[in-house]
Image (cartoon, rainbow over all chains, first blue to last red; front, side):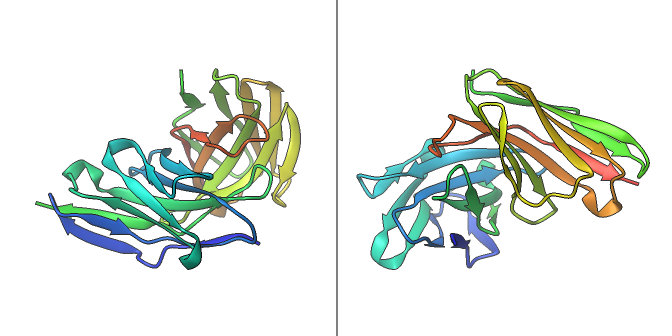
Length: 112
Length: 113
């Protein structure tokens, strides 16, 4: 069965500082990997995705993520955080037909 | 147009009521999904429709009844719900058979009294 672990429930960073959100997955084959962002009471927006090829993936809003097969990780990074980045971030893995499994999420707080 | 719309935004219903949630997309996607999300939890898959046929039912109680009238529309009929069914209900769509990305709607906030 596929699963995702996001070890950090809550992260606080200062505006302008760099950010890294951790994600570890479990899946028997090459997975599809995603990062989604959710503002309070809103739907999910796809930030980026990895299917194959270059292991460093660029997304929207200045985010990037790196797929490391040896570590079963897909960490999300941003070099300089903006106050508007405060939200909940979900890592997800897809491998079974049409089924995506989400991690428990990391809540990002940005302080001035 | 990369938008998935959901109506209503908010819904309050009693345990004996019957109501429906509606989802619509015009991206030509052939797979549509219902998720349930409780506060501070990740979305949980409920149903998947592929080419207007139900392909996945994640053992959802029968008080939730999905319907896909056509490739652009997805409904979720609600009947005899329990207070613990209060949650944010999210609809999503994707190109059928392709997990490349799911587009999510803004959700319907459901409160069962």
